[in-house]
Image (tube, rainbow, N blue to C red; front, top):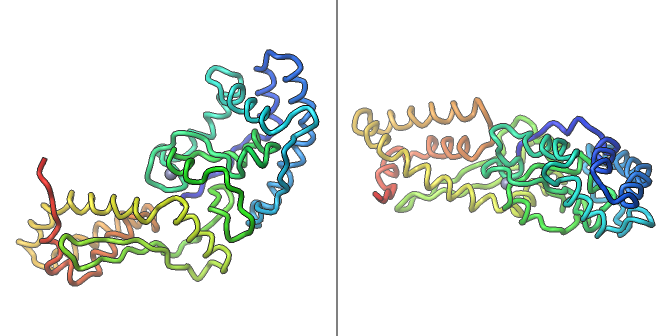
Length: 286
Ligand SMILES: [Zn+2]
């Protein structure tokens, strides 16, 4: 997961921008009337988010008497996020925040949408609340679905609040097979408590990161196999190891816990891979 700075505008601003684009007078008024409820909910969210306790936010079917979850869903989709609406620039500000447009939840796929961290159907008071809106790829968005965490350990990671620290925690294991295969797993950092450890593992599982990274790693190995053969011929296993170490350090300097950093570390540290494994990478010429 990649950390992101939270959006710089408030729920009150999002609601006003949204309401100003609603031509149905009663609906716009009902939304403006809901501002105190929405602002109170946002304040509670801001308090619980840094503590990792968003699971304890109260669920509800209504925002106010006049606005239920279904109507709030319509307001989000047909007004707040609608192309050309006065609030669309705010939606875009959230969607476009990640560097290179990469999804902060998987770090790999491209952002396609905005995900409600606490789902719309159960937390309609948070539908337009900027800190509850997280840019996501469509796979991560679908994988999260509308389930609500019942306890702290069930919460996936929140890019605006969770900090995984500086230690390495994503690890790649190289299996001595033909072709070589790589599997990824989470090795708990000493900076994490038991709840955060459970949450990182949960996030990994829900977003399907182990198979995603394994597939990417297999493709990356096929990409580098030609270069590795050249290095191996010129400088043997020592040369292979030095080459992989340079690749590792370059990735590590940018992101200590990307799958590429973990991959190159795992390959570098595998005596089997540096000695013979690199010959066994299967590349299909197309
Ligand atoms: Zn994603």
